[in-house]
Image (cartoon, rainbow, N blue to C red; front, side):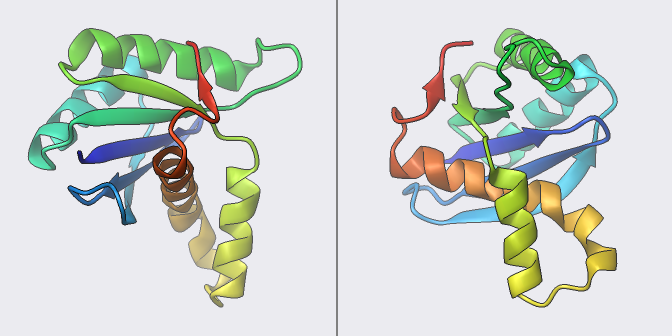
Length: 141
């Protein structure tokens, strides 16, 4: 089954997609974040165009459990679940942005390009983790 993955930030949303067999994840261009409802509409269109059978959303986990990122992601997840006819799963995204930056540095990508690439690279890492072990870091949200 083909999955889309999202790394939701305050300004941009990283997006990744896998192949039909769930083996290879690829980053797609990031989307601008303009609120949960608009994002849900954009993801519904993208899911249809990519024939996605599910969406996995990276959730930032803080000690309090109520950080601004977590509240933003919870609103997006609710909007996606209301709008989409496919499963919407959540997955712990801890460390993915740091790992994405390290991958970009290792690949020699100029730092001026990082803002346009880091979010979707993080989404790809979320998707790879989800595909490798879908129950290991799945969250109940």
